[in-house]
Length: 153
Image 1 (cartoon, one colour):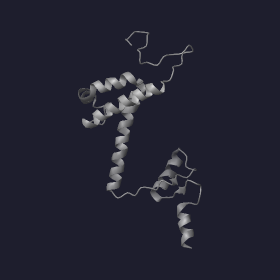
Image 2 (cartoon, one colour; image 1 turned 135 degrees about the vertical axis):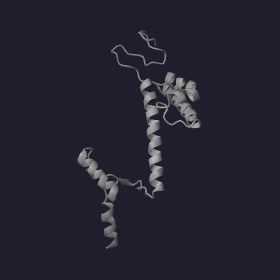
Image 3 (tube, one colour; image 1 turned 90 degrees about the vertical axis):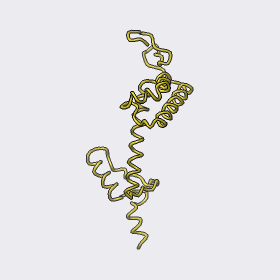
Image 4 (cartoon, one colour; image 1 turned 30 degrees about the horizontal axis):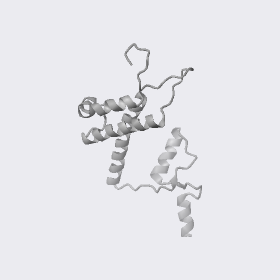
């Protein structure tokens, strides 16, 4: 699509009569994911994590693959994939740092108590949950600490 063109490019979502856009089908999504994976593999080989901040370096190393992804994927998806890649990398580095400091992961069968909201008080409760290990089983059973106390009696 040109700067002032009103005709969409072939890979752009097509609008319906009421102005909404048609979501991409399975094969279009698969092509998008394949080009994304190829681009990210190239970035991995070039040791580039953030292709937004290091755009020049990413263009030099993987420009053709990036253009392929931009052709096959919606622009909002491309931005999301790039941002998520950085977020996942940071998350992995945080896990590695915590493990190096001796942190112990919580078992997968634990759930955050349902009373924790997303507000400021909820975040304080979440902090208490993480720091003090007050956890509940996903099946709604006893608080883990209470269950341990019952076992010892």
